[in-house]
Image (cartoon, rainbow, N blue to C red; front, side, top):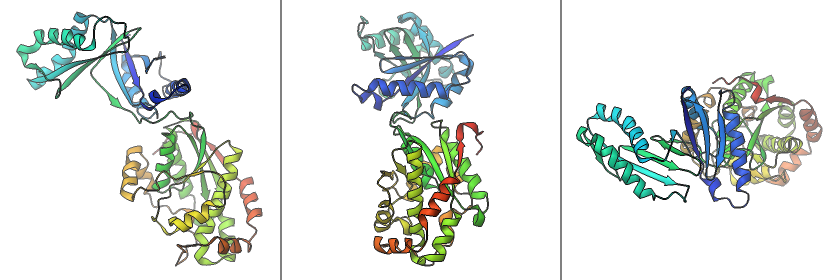
Length: 398
């Protein structure tokens, strides 16, 4: 069966020093996981690149999977070939000829990269020799050379073990490979923002588990089902994710019945942070992730963010903190969560929403309210009733 070579590139990992091997090994592991189920594929690591050998019929499917793997900057599908001028030119002619016939005219160039510095011919000399042979064969059909504005680029990678020729590059997510930076826990609400913040931490090398605060007693099951679907979509970018579902209705009823109305939403958030911290510690997560953005809603003013954060000593990562809503929406569309997020399902923070929520909460008043209901007991009960969903076990639906 005819095979092709996958040339998988990374960028940020290449800047690492002595720990570079750790990041490379993690990326190789993630690539193998992403391509699990594809037959007869072999993945090898070389200096600065990762190579895959795959059946031609599976090459497009592999590229589609690899586009969703953080840490990869680009992927090319090419042919492994001897570093011979005539053989590479012959392959280039075959690749160019079909495009040339349909367009009538075509500008092209050859670009060679030598990771094997012992190869006796320079990259520019190799470009010239291969390009000259292609021009000799096709110039009369309308082919011309344009190094700066080429319509078709024939790329050649000369490595220590093999030479690869290709004419395509598919962009990846870049960043760092998931698992190289540890684990964090994201507060996933079902809105537009929190899925984007979850994804952002994945591209920084974190495996991100999620927690959803569920109030189906008052809101029904729709919000739960929506968040499960969002978590499934996000898990495609990492694998190994878990979703923790926390029953939150008893806590919200207690806050409604005992505390000042204006503090209600901030008090919800303080309890969410406490519970999330406890879950994070139980699951070896080293930080919390939220979709908060300064000033977007009443609970996200600087004073309210500070009043919420102070209940936990754990790091709280807010990757969207300086982004506006339109920027967040663009990101949500790019990662495939937007259409689910805009489905009309309320989240639990909308339950018992006060008419005039505070935008300048003060810690002493919040703590005074919290003395009016048994939050520690309710927190213990909620943690004892957490549902854990292993996302790898679910079939992805959108």
